[in-house]
Length: 162
Image 1: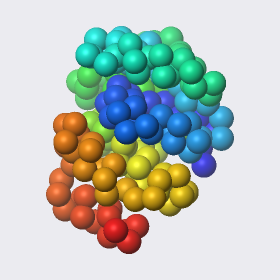
Image 2: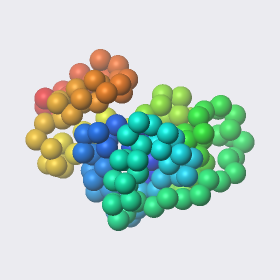
Image 3: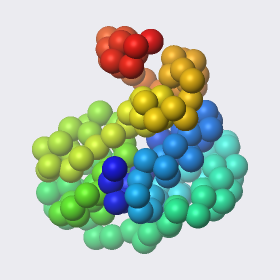
Image 4: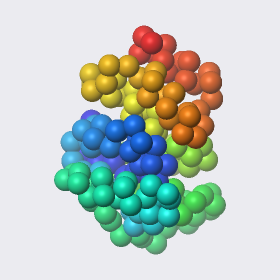
């Protein structure tokens, strides 16, 4: 398990809708950081205040300040939240970026930053026994707008025997 996770808006939004913020925190031995730029993105959503209240209730969640983004990340022209998450992760040992955006995940991999997304958190929750079945959770995420390739969903469910 990682010492620290730095999470972007999309996973916060999607996981909060399926009761998964606790899973995120429990997957980490230390703390889960949320960058101020991500807080602003979440706050702008229709359920933003509910999510922010839930984050404030989680003792292991910390809000961290935005940083000057290294040019190697800025060159990817990602969203502000993704850019900040990756900037905070760059060069940090045992820190995982929690991102759903495909381009941001590609950037993370190219820079050697470990990455997990909403799907990975759900699969981990199933493996840890925190949920009985991942399929209904994944179906809810898809219904709420999380884009996942059907082949990826099938592969993920097969991996956990569902």
